[in-house]
Length: 397
Length: 132
Image (cartoon, rainbow over all chains, first blue to last red; front, side):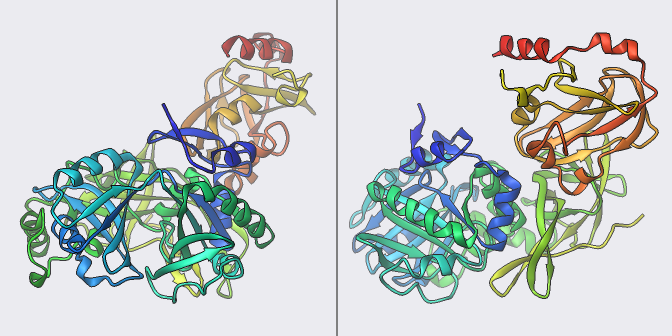
């Protein structure tokens, strides 16, 4: 039994290669394929149907306090029109999920979770309900579309009735497209410096998608499937639950967890706090104890391939293995702009011994080959409204 | 599967979805439309060295797609005379034009008699149809 998003028929009619993903029928890619969709997003922009994700509405006078007791980040840092990355921790400091929390009004929040964890999260949150909190699953009521990339502002601004949210990470606001009321947020999962997510009533999403696809085409903004959604997040170094985050792995093993975990003493206790403090101390001490391995970015330095599960070694000594990895396309940049030529490079995220240093030269074993690689800080950097690929020099011979 | 594009006449086929075209004394080898469609977006091709010796139905190269890795087998024994180096930067040529610009290697010194072990377009299409 697979569910259909409001855009399903459009995907099917426009060359979408539909697959089952976390209980949903969604396109892996359209006619031009994953590589073309990845490159189009980086140069112009991409449209994503992400209605499969879980969306929970949290309202009421105790909404903030309740969220603060169950989420690793501090919703007290938000105000209406702001959003934050966060996680749902179990008592042992292991992730039930990673999520995004949007504050829309003083007593109204939206929590967006992974489709694959939707039911688990729903049960967990319902089990922990508190007085003064109205908690509802709005996943089938609200659709979610993403517009990501350098020209996404050019696409959206003329279509919307109200100005776009002020520039700045994770800002959002209510808006209108024609007669459709929506919430627009500067957030996303591609690493793009200019990126938006739209929350809108389920039954209106088809017409809005049509409009975005039609207006986007002349700008080079194209529909993008799950395949390029994955390569875009990987190139941006963003974690994916089930790969980098796992329910049997400490949350602090993922470096981006730092952005979503607030251990400030003033915010008070929350579920998993003591365990996360233990993990943070283990990392800070350099002894690593309960966090023996953590996630690093690994770039291939030659022609070759890497995939999830590939072993990573340094001087013949095992360091760990890839949690995600594949060939990723990139534009040649010139003069601060993406040019007409692209190249492909193998990139991955890897769970390696916690003491590993950025700059470490490694070998990545994939099938019968050992690919030279290097542990790096990141694969990309923002350059104006673009995300520029960082090029790495050849590895040690 | 009946369209000419999916398995052109005049080519030889293996059950592992390679095709062979005889051209100017060389055997041009590629992947069939069925193979590229099954693999999905191709992102990397590990081509053999020029002058490498290959054996009929022995491993010749590896094609990687977003989904998976696939061994490509040599349809004929022979010597790798030329590889399609355009695939190094544009492996998607296999998806876009598997019987043309997306060819993989050209073999020389092959044995004509081995062609008898391969299928014609009709037999290959028949095999694909049965497999559905």
